[in-house]
Length: 392
Ligand SMILES: *Cc1c(COP(=O)(O)O)cnc(C)c1O
Image (cartoon, rainbow, N blue to C red; front, top):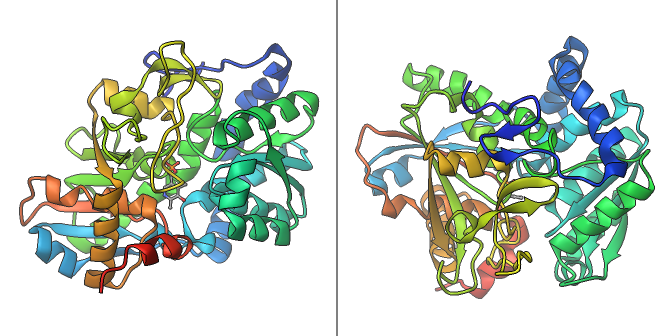
């Protein structure tokens, strides 16, 4: 299994667990137990029941006829936007909260950038009656008031990160600092990033996306495999979930779309695979955007969920081995794609998701080519941005 990590959590040269000595017991505890727990019948029963009745799965696989007609291909949308809380992130938080409970943890910590993962975490903590602390950059708290309000209403404590640029990477530093001081807490990471075993654990929990795609495609087309799967990549969790059960099927094309921002060479971008170099971020060896001194550089994208300065180690490996093709879309291209999907299909996508849609015009498509686009989230949270760009 070429695209599964080693026991130490390596995908080729990427991955591993680069963490302070004091956190080794926590990570070891998780490493020793996560596969056992996830594969147990008890976990699977609870997880699948919550996904069905709480999250609203299976999410539909929808044939987008007008979009298909426009691009001359057969395009299906995997509707993760219809999940409770509006995106794929809850697949992971539901799974990890069950794992945390099985490990006897009662206090959950998380970091968040735009607040989407913070909301998904606060949601499952409310569901389970567990204490929740969310670290968030002070600047992001000011920018993302509705999500801060949601987290507070859900009972979470939102702690501002006051250091550095006061954004996501600073919130991550604060969360790790707190974890060292309170090793009894459970650190709930929101993407396929962080020290092993998080990238693999999160990928397994998001793999429900491609598990459903397989039987849904079979039902609709008679074949389990599409020709191409397209997903946007911030840290890489929705893409990992959409790719997971197809990774070893090399005839299925995988397209990962990063945020080009104002343009890859503009200095205002988050296209990590194009701009990054090998380094360590968030406890994992991967590719990340850094300056000549190895300091992490601040990424930029119009979409808050994609402006992460790294990608998870699986994606670094998919990029290096060329198993996945890495494309990018600029702010303007993403906006245009969001308006187009809305007009053609009556679906307002999240700005992150719009990046995945935006590569359709750049691809060489054929009429009978079956494409699945992972519609990672809905656009309600982005309405303010969309309104600024609405043309009559
Ligand atoms: C957070 C988010 C993303 C980016 O995160 P990944 O881990 O790369 O999936 C993409 N789409 C939506 C809707 C999100 O909320």
